[in-house]
Length: 322
Image 1: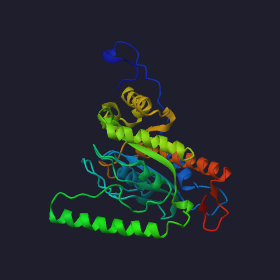
Image 2: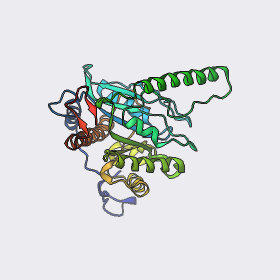
Image 3: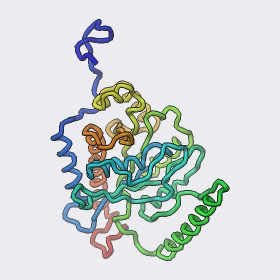
Image 4: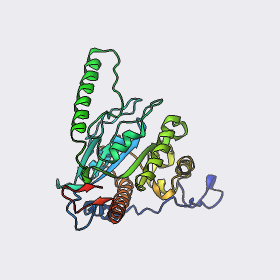
């Protein structure tokens, strides 16, 4: 686009007000990676080995792709560690924690916790999310499994039921045991498809609103929004990822999220996914790392508040949640 002339060359081109100031340089990319790699949940406390970030979202919004993108940024190649889909049914069937590693293979001090995508018309109880926030729901189904009548699907159905029962028994047996602080979630991320926000199902919108209330009840757990597939809702961004910082289409979507769910602009991060790329582009990496750094820093502040309020007893044997 000609930066000196407007449409048809009839006047000067005025770039819209920036949504967020972004430094697209390679130096900033390295600074962001360093900030994430050097992150520790609580300085001087070895009990906090890593911080958990909980991903919530509709089917196909890109939760698993986020795991793959961040893994790829630190692995320097396009990873498909978490299976992803663009269909109407969730590939992620259970709550799963992904440990992210640096390019040298060192475990970073956070985990991404993927959850089952919410399907149109499906009802997910907030009690399920409460268990995941508290670190109780380890590798358990978030809803009843179902099958389509085929023998393979029927086998998988009963297998899921059997393993679900075994996990429930394990939790029942050890229910008196205090939870490990390293299993609790300290930041929640709502993953929303920017290109389909205008047709988001009512049950999904209500689910997000219920979750927001739940976060406030849980000592105000930090909340971040990742607006995925921003390049699919704007041809300008599709042609130039740097336009994401000022594109009117993206600003409109961000405003809709603010109006619909009550988020502030500084909680919302438009990003793109890497499904079409063999290698993660610098611009893509910067967008994700800016959001990830915000998640980590806000999560760390939340941990400090919990310690100050004595909601977490870091001196107790076994590192318990009070």
